[in-house]
Image (cartoon, rainbow, N blue to C red; front, side):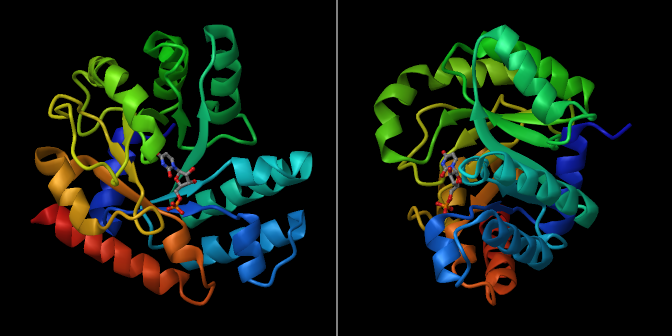
Length: 268
Ligand SMILES: O=c1ccn([C@@H]2O[C@H](COP(=O)(O)O)[C@@H](O)[C@H]2O)c(=O)[nH]1
């Protein structure tokens, strides 16, 4: 039906440059934009972001939490925004950080990865803290649907380091095994914060995309990407939300600036 996710992602990154723009319609941003904190405000916010970046960002990442807080009305907006993003041609990565036992993971996979679902996206973030093996069914489903998954490995928040540094090696090894033999990028990515002071594992064998959140509001800069990711910089998908979303009039310009800065630092 589609080409494999890794092929589609590679093509988007090569054509549009390395950037994922987050859609994070928080109460604070809705207020800053003069919008009601309501499903109607949420929809207005999201449509403005889609119009501003849908044709210039390789990937767009709606944050599920900001839709879930409105219950079924928020999920209805999310469904519409996913459809609008798909019409705009960008890849849609839903940041839902799901992780559970195998039978429950099968339901999450059906919700986010099955072509017939109203919430189907190109890729979804997953949490491996029930064991990397618990994600096997979702990875199989992603491959069957030409979709992708991004597994939390070393997240951008400072509280994560103590826990995740103990288990990240297992996650990177699991991802590398799932991606073995696939080109140009496997369907299983990892999440590694651009905010990290350094990497304590090699990512050379990963063969999959690296989502790197933390630019802007969390303190990381495009220059940090080259420092952190070295030999695997070609696979990095930097992600930014608040730093481009503060003013609806400036979203597109700021997105283009981040995109070009990231491309510059990831190419040197
Ligand atoms: O390690 C992670 C994983 C996910 N996120 C999510 O990305 C955005 C970041 O927003 P900014 O405004 O660019 O800080 C947000 O949706 C997080 O839930 C992350 O920050 N770190």
